[in-house]
Length: 249
Image (cartoon, rainbow, N blue to C red; front, side, top):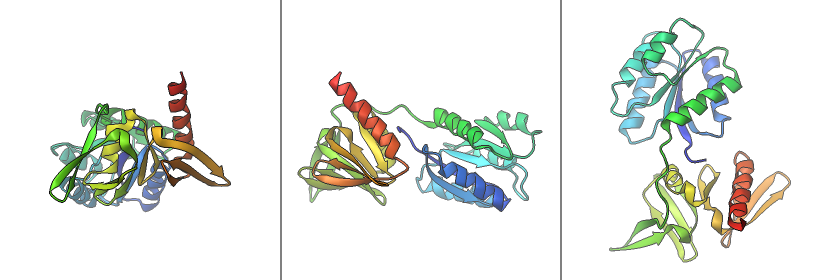
């Protein structure tokens, strides 16, 4: 997956909000789901997230809410420098024209069906995912006590998220760099790097074994054995098989 989405779900009805958040979290294209139970809280959360440099790709937004309703909130969001895209989720079908005038990606009617929500996520993904940057001959500069080492992408076995940093593991050791794992995934997806866990990205070229042991899935990359999350296991297997078929052909 080239780009996993970070979204905010907003609804003043708690059961509906919990159901929407649950369905979104089941989608493999979604990296993170935040929630807000009213428009004012949602606006405050968005200002904090975006102001703090956190990526927010989309907002799944109810319309009829007390105080700041969904349409008013959408108008305010439209004034952000780089606004997240909007998907309206409502029990009312009389606001669709206004929603699309606000350039909504989609308009879903409650009760939300999983397959219909999946289509909305597909549309959101299509309009938010940038083309990956060229990864050929890419290097990562690493600061090491007054000197800079340039670590080539081809030398990296895997990368793991460490808060606001990523630790790059190679045959020569590991290096800590300030960047997000999601950004690295977008940058190197076409070079065969695969997400195997929420916090781990591996280089397919260095994977020598994928093992299924009961319900546990692991792979060997370089000299390390790493766990593959259940959520990513099928995708990892398909990507590795495809990569190796391309090499053989």
